[in-house]
Image (cartoon, rainbow, N blue to C red; front, side, top):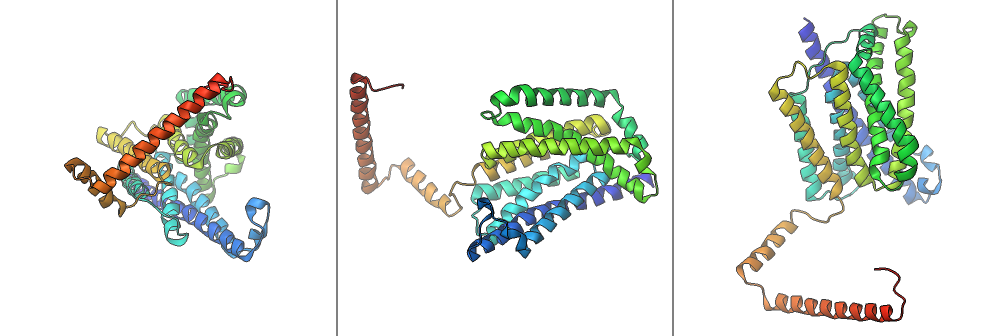
Length: 362
């Protein structure tokens, strides 16, 4: 009976996690459509300090969609392992990218399409091989887990690393090194997910009639969650403000998910009862998602589609067969001569400036 209940909870958590990605991914499209509609009307844009979007129905629909997605994601942690729920958050990026290509006319190149496919395949593999965590019935069982020496050591190390990064490394290298602020968000995020998991269990107990408000563990988890989430939002916004979003998003996903997987393995002992096949499948699925997210973000500005592929292959084939046309040969020769002239001119200018003492540095 307990095994059937665990399987039932697993599927509930899976559906909630997928629906969360759909809601959150769709929310970006609704918000963007609302902002574009306001721009066509001539209203002051949000980037210029305007607040006309508060009167736009599509923007509010996007906000409600995001709220529904976050609630579904919060509830998913109460039913399914964090090792399953957290990686599936990548699906919201895919949903947003796919919907953008249809409703916002944003081009999705061949790299992005392959990235979407790989992420979906990786998510499927992780669902199949997802670990089955130990069943935690109430906050008392959760408090026993939190008091485990292994988790206490992990939490202490996370807090020490975070404090060093915030007060020592951050002021010196945060503006130049992308990993500083992302690492702070990621390691703190592992603790926030554990708090969310505990609060999800508390809410289930609340509906079952348990006096969770009188349990001090509930308040400890709630306060810890507020502190952790506030810290994450602060330093993630700093990273997004300084560095390119296409770099921050995939790096943060990898670091954050890795931290959550580590924390869940220590706190819930999810890996103790897994076979070697399931372990390999979980890691393979996670790595596949990482590759997919990387392809989706790293090459999103490269204008390359399937229609370009035959042209590129034909050019390569011509070069290999030695059948380069005279026109192309003349064009390449002219380009080379032009490059040589430019190099000579640049060299002369450099020598002249050096003779005049006007070259500051090389």
